[in-house]
Amino acid sequence: MPLFPVDNGDRKPIGGDTVSAIGLGTWAIRNPRRAFEALVEAIETGLVDNIDTAEMYGEGTAEELVGEVLRKVGRERVFVTTKVLPWRLRSFEELEKAIRASLRRLGVETVDLILIHWPLEGMPVSEQVRRLEKIAIGKGYARYIGVSNFDDRELEEALHATASAEIVVDQVHYSVLHRRWVEEKLLPLALRNNVTIQAYTPLERGRVAEHPVVRRIAERVGRTPIQVALNYLISRPRVVAIPKTENREHLREILGAMGWRLTEDAIEELERIGE
Ligand SMILES: NC(=O)c1ccc[n+]([C@@H]2O[C@H](COP(=O)([O-])OP(=O)(O)OC[C@H]3O[C@@H](n4cnc5c(N)ncnc54)[C@H](OP(=O)(O)O)[C@@H]3O)[C@@H](O)[C@H]2O)c1
Image (tube, rainbow, N blue to C red; front, side, top):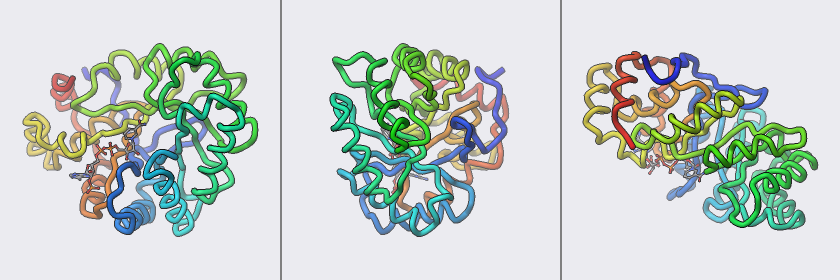
């Protein structure tokens, strides 16, 4: 039996919404035009409806690009996640200014989800989360709040800290090659608390396709190694994978990771690899 019951659906809950099991990231974009085209194509297929960005990415230019995509495809078609830099949390004024700047770059009045990009050293997690809740939710800038790069103890503290909003997401590094801690510690806690895990660097920047076990399974099931690596992640309940691509061929390969599932045997085989 795999470690978790296989989730056969290509829609995943985030708070009271559902999003596609694969969303797209926007870190380290090299060619904004190509990235724009790939993101628009992804949304227009109807297969992808969530995009991940951050004030940090390209120093705001990734948010601006996502803003352009939203204007092209229609704001209502995309669940947008962005992230504030942790040190913004040091003052309410700074936090509000940073969030308003993100919204301005995105060209939206409200973002769907705002995450703390990583925990701020020197401030209790509970205080960080309360500050984000007060400004992001309290002032209507975000529909949901969450965290990123929080370990299981930090997530647990965050879950208990909010006044009335829920922590709906922890976005962490999770791939078939980097899986143990997530599967042993974080995902069980997330599942008990209705927290969705957004899996970042799910392709290890392409390296997943080189692993012999991933390749062998891909050959056996008639899919590509990239598709096997992503399918492994989305077969987990409450896991959304957010690969990044600015290449439409790569995008089509990524989209082909949905609509089918690895067998339980194949998932178990993959559970034996990775750190
Ligand atoms: N919260 C955080 O701290 C954090 C940290 C890291 C990342 N993230 C988010 O997660 C997203 C994804 O993570 P990531 O960008 O680190 O890594 P990734 O998605 O594992 O890898 C992206 C790289 O893989 C390439 N690629 C995409 N599809 C491919 C395919 N089908 N075949 C071969 N190569 C392919 C991309 O190049 P092409 O563009 O040329 O296709 C890109 O260079 C980021 O963009 C960001 O939104 C969040």
